[in-house]
Image (cartoon, rainbow, N blue to C red; front, top):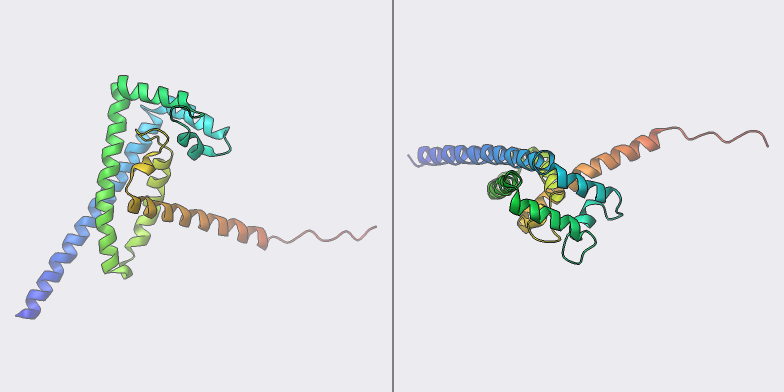
Length: 194
């Protein structure tokens, strides 16, 4: 009888875990869609200005966002961003939707981390790696409602570390591929004439 009860409990736990994973994947996709929707639709005007500033700034996007504060190099961008948040309902609604979706993903993703810790062999970490990287990248390119910060800064420290590890992992794969490709090419032969 105890074995049947234990088996039943295990099935319930597995079902609960499966639903939590599915919910996290759905919330992750919703967060990514909301962030990209904000950047490419309602927020496209100010985001194109921010991207342009990032292209011309050695610190890139991170440098621009950190200087979007009073007295910062890109204070004017912060002023435009804050004005749009305050006066443009569509902009504010899209930004709030992205913020809410990101927070929901943060909650559900933290629950998945607990599941991964219980059964690392399930391969769940790898399943979330690409999604975490995409969300982390999109959040890192979206201004926070707080001066000088990105949406990535708004995420809890633990979740930000998860995203950062995923982004770093994806970058390292590309860097290794580029390095391997460069070393697999034959080097030019020395010139025989002199």
